Length: 109
Length: 116
Image 1 (cartoon, rainbow over the protein chains, first blue to last red):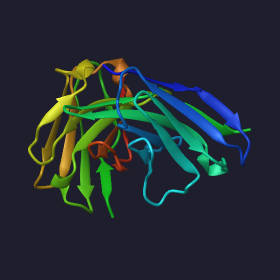
Image 2: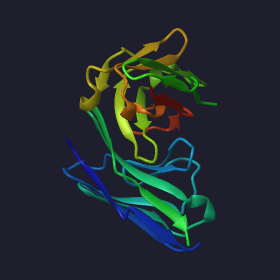
Image 3: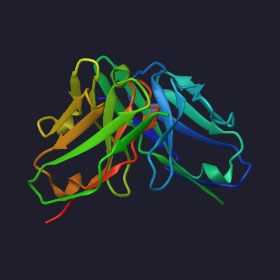
Image 4: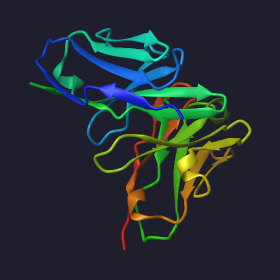
């Protein structure tokens, strides 16, 4: 099974700061990597799919990069509404198999 | 607009079963697979299983094989997740989510509490 790790597990940053979260897969996963944001008491929300594609309608301060085993998620200028927990998720289609990273909790300093 | 609406909270005793529903609207049900994910209190997200709404084929997380069954009723556009032999560590919020590689719409979540 593929294992996903994320770092840091939590971070605190100021409004306007650049925030970077990394995600590492235990095996090669090409670009089959998504990023989700979850706010307390809410369902997760898709932000980035296939490592670097911004979901429709979302602000351009969110971005993703990487391929293979190492991936990065960036918020270019942290906003108060960005607080929450961010999860990376790897997927395989044959057969369908999904694994989430442990999450990174982001809050405002 | 696309919506996935889940059934309400459940309280079950250890050893019992629970069946959670997820009713889809706003799109053609058979065009997108459905996944089930759970989140224990204060914990991360755990994928449980996947169903093709086109042909009913299922895949389950190895950890839950034999205890979980995912089905659909295409006549009503509803997916179901049944979990049997409930234990206290099955207490969690259960979510359905639409999609294969990317999951672009999620249900609101259903809290299942397992307690004697």
